[in-house]
Length: 134
Image (tube, rainbow, N blue to C red; front, side, top):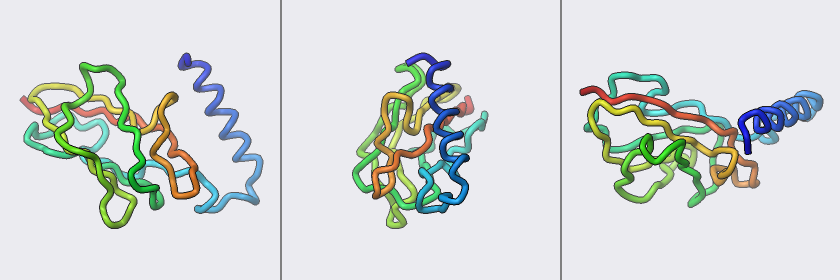
């Protein structure tokens, strides 16, 4: 799917949701990323960091995630199985990072949308980009 088509679909979905303002509740909205570690846009991440964490706006369905690649070169080496913390809002991906490298990881994407709440609503796609220090 092209980026332009994806943008049109996202805008259509947004306008559909925005048009139903009376139906807007935390429960009815899709999950969104509220926090990442490393922080998005960081340029000095310690390459010894051994996990990537993403926290969502609501509890998520267990054993369901889509850590997706932007490219093979920009995706970290995975060093174990992803898991949710007890709060079911924070998913942890064990990784091995290299120094001086830029990483780009989709949390859901236009192809993959398995980060979802228990009612099956997929999380809004989020691109996490950061760079490790030398």
